[in-house]
Length: 213
Image 1: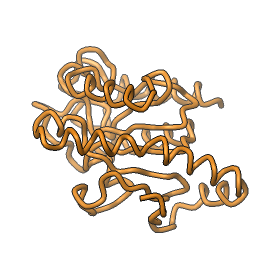
Image 2: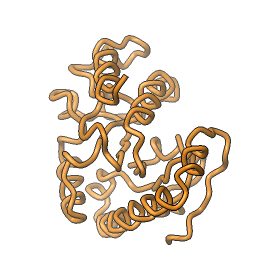
Image 3: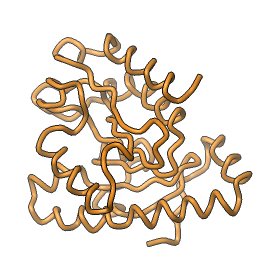
Image 4: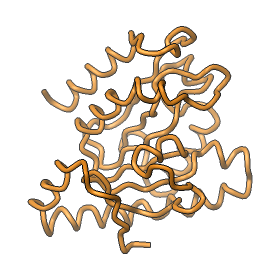
């Protein structure tokens, strides 16, 4: 099955999913969108009001800031893939519950496996936790690590910059590192494709700090 077919299958399943109580309040599920062969995968936390209405990720104020951030590093939405750890809006935009994240985890894993991104950027602490466990985002934001065969970067959610003005420049500066991380990922693949492929199959390796930053 091609990456496009897998992502289409996931999107269909998400649209009718009844695995958790979030399905009861949704207008539309938000499976994610973008380039099915993207080098960069962005993972947010969950849909908000605007996303729930449109069925698309990051289309509200935080999404507008994300568009600005992408443009600052010469990228656009068509170049990347954007999704969330939960695919339906939590009531009143509350934090997703553990059981809700667990219910969507298989969808996210299948999306990652289909896209095979070189770099995964987590936006916010709930997507960060999938790759970095209980570490604090204030301590590791903007840092690149190798985990589960991918290079992952933990970043603040764009909404954090809207709620706390002092974080806007922090987020902007963190985003400027993404092209460097992509270049490093490409170098690693070019130098040792067999080693990278073997690493991608391993799900037990601990996070490794890269020497980039």
